[in-house]
Length: 368
Image (cartoon, rainbow, N blue to C red; front, side, top):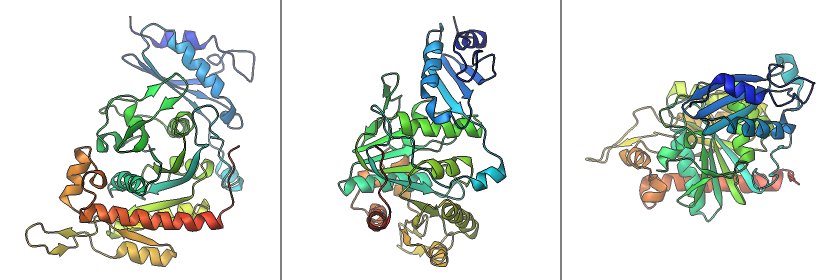
């Protein structure tokens, strides 16, 4: 017998509202119940000031729903209303991360966290994220990759991994491929499933992937952010101790305009921009060897100079990059000696150098 919404709500009505005498259902905390086959998704609206301390409530809700007949998989997220615009401006820009690695999950043993961002979609941000992470692996680092693009997760396909990660009910154990640990919402749902979630649910899902995944000891965790400058990017910049950001753009004026907005956002959030990557910089004809600048050329370097940030390097528009990504064998892993892979490896060297500088200049962040 398939699970029904009434059965789900009946199970959740046994859980008391931590701030009152009635249940979380009667107090209106349970929202967005969605059932698809044996998969149940819902959110629990909580007071923003209590959100980070209510993980036990979320787990209790999962356990209650797990006992309902027909339920095979559960996604329960904590959500909180955003503060008013005036309050947001007055709030502290960044806080030490609450994701302190209690138990087996969390980022408590992660050395540096680097966000890869773009002002708009379609510039190859995820391709850069995957190959940058694999380039760090090639440097001998312990590396993790979190695909935080909830609406368009592509990392599982690029790394050639399907299926859900293992879990003991509380902790999620990330997939591992090519020496790289990774986690993605694309590993939790079917590839064709559309994530029709509002902003607070997306933010909560990202936070729980950081908090509940057993990342273990890492030198670098790469965050593949969603495109744009919205809630997800702002929340991550506020709550996660980012060592810096890498902004990806193509040479087009429109893409560069959006890249500038991304740099401005990180600057406002007090997150250092490590530099800009110009993707699809030039197309080299496989027959004659002539380079054609289809989208223009040099715009990212000029943008970097105008903002006083580093230009990290160029990545060509090449068929092999697309083919290896589609095949689940990214070019840095499959053909590391190729000129295309060498472009990513050089960018990783530049980022590592910047992280080294940041280590000397930035205060130590303690997760104990």
